[in-house]
Image (cartoon, rainbow, N blue to C red):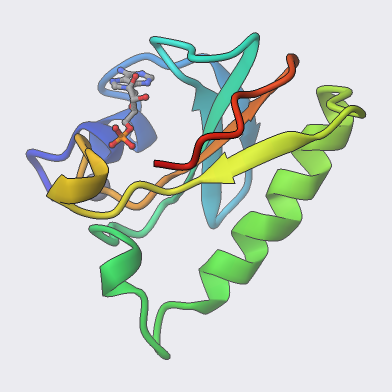
Length: 113
Ligand code: AMP
Ligand code: ZN
C-alpha cells in the first residue's frame, strides 16, 4: 500500500522510534503519546483493520499478542497496561493499517467509550 503511513514506516521511508522488530511485526513509539508509555504494534503485512482479519492472515495477530506481552515486560509495565485497536470511523481509527496500542505507565481512565 504505497499511500499507507505505517507501510512507509515499515519500509523506512518515514522515521520511527523502534521498540521491537522481527520478520512479521514492527513496534514503535506513538508520535502523540496518550500515556507515559504508548507503543504501536503493527503487522508488516498491510491489513486495514480488525475488520480485515480472517483465517488466512490471523496467525500474525496471535504473534502480535506474544510480542505485546514481551514488550510490556521489557518496558516494565508491571502495574498493568491496556491494549486497544480502533476499528473504523466510529472508533476514531485514523491510520488504516492494523495496529494495537499499548498504553501504560500510569493509572488509566476506566471509561471505555
Ligand atoms: P488510531 O487513531 O487508532 O488510528 O491510531 C493512530 C495512531 O498513530 C495515533 O495514536 C497517532 O498518534 C499515531 N501516529 C500517527 N503518525 C505517526 C507517526 N509518524 N509515528 C508514530 N505514530 C504515529
Ligand atoms: Zn499499510
